[in-house]
Image (tube, rainbow, N blue to C red; front, side, top):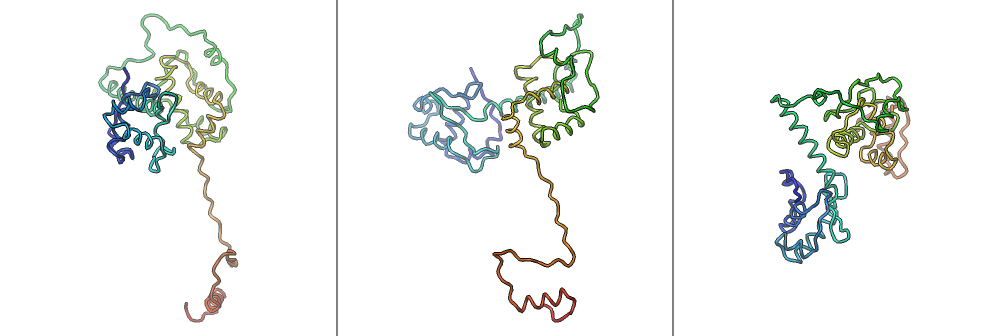
Length: 279
């Protein structure tokens, strides 16, 4: 049986400004969704579960499938997409992983404060055996990287990825320059990396050098995915002020409204320092 966390922030979402039927259908779809955000139902079945009429359900789906000009997630605001025999809730997995990662961090902080968290590297009487997987072999070598000046932080023992992992300041500076990333883009990639190794398919696996593993993660990232991170978090171009040359002549743009001759003459006198009456 699947379930969905319902956060109080939904009350501030633009979906809460829609009709009560749309809100009912939306929350019903969240409750019915699989772990991948797919809602298996017909329009009639969804209407029965949401306790709305068939026409009300169709209108709600049309609204949820349409764009939302007040969307705050950087997309067009489309919440659901019709697929064969079902609907797909867009961004469902992303927000689920993001919220869960945040919840795990808070839970770990509470447990640490109460003294119930054990060191993840503590062994139970026997030394931990290293995995002969190819992935560990690539870590034994020094993978090609633009970070030539970064100190070696390889440990003698393997540890799980910490929830607070982030690239070192030196690595962040050089990675941003090498891949053309903004600080926000690198942070988003780092969060995805932590989510994968703490809650995704890599959960529970240990490595000896997480800084090197993150560099490898970036190096193996497909160009379309890297470009998607760049597009969502563009680099801000620094604004260089244009110096004003003393005594420069102002050239109006071609579509500028002509200045009345008497005003132009007075401005000319003032610029020459010949005095005259004020404007």
